Every structure is written in C-alpha cells, then in structure tokens.
Length: 156
Image (cartoon, rainbow, N blue to C red):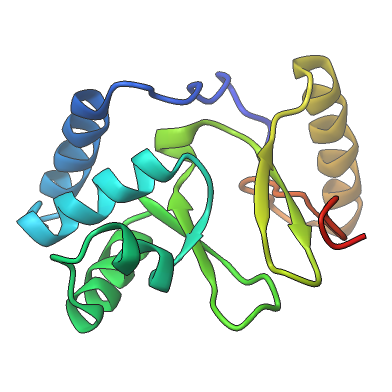
C-alpha cells in the first residue's frame, strides 16, 4: 500500500481526463464509446460523487440501461469508483487514477458524499500504520480508503 509515488492530483482539464480514460480503455482492449465519454464528462463536471439519477438528470441524452452498463465497464477498468453510502442509490465518481488520492465524508441521513484530501504528512503516517498492521497479519495491502460517516450540516 505504500505508494512509491504520490498519486496524481485532480485533473481539471476535461480533455486530459478524456485522454487518460481513452488510453486506459485502449490498453485494456475496450472502446471509449460516446456513452462512456458522456458519463466521464458528467462525472468530471459534477466535481463530487453522484448517483445514477443525478447523472441522468445532468444529461437527458443518457439512457438508464446503457449508463448502468457503461458505469460497470468503467468501474471494472478502475476508471470509476462506486461508493455504497447506505442511501437508496450508490454514488459514482472518477477513480483515483483520475481524481488523485482522497477520502469521503458520507451523510448517513441524506446520502450526500463530499471529497476530502488529507495533508501529505498525515497520509504517509496513515500508510505506515496501516502497512505495519497489515504486515503483522501477513496481509498484502494495495491501497487504503477512509470514509467518515456522520451527518452533514443540513441534516444535523
């Protein structure tokens, strides 16, 4: 889990996001179809994890069935991350290779998910502690995620 190089920060430029996604899909023998491209654009524009209904509302050209299929492909290729929030719908976001390493604040009442980034020194200390705990059990970690569940300011 110890990252040899820090993960990239978030990409602000949509063209660069599309290039990264297209390259990764091509390397995995997948096509970057117009439906996948639209989903990636909406996820990038949202700037936060969103539900499928949110995505469909953002782009009336997306159909629910093809959006689910394309999200599945993008998730299996590690380009999109699905977050189970306990709400009616899971949330989706661009994955760490695109957004960079971050964590989440998840509201247990309304299901809102917010991204948070921790200080690099704190991330290194967390990595060391988690690697040490894993080593004691013979576990081979790949990465870590931290999601803090609670109530957002609107639900308190």
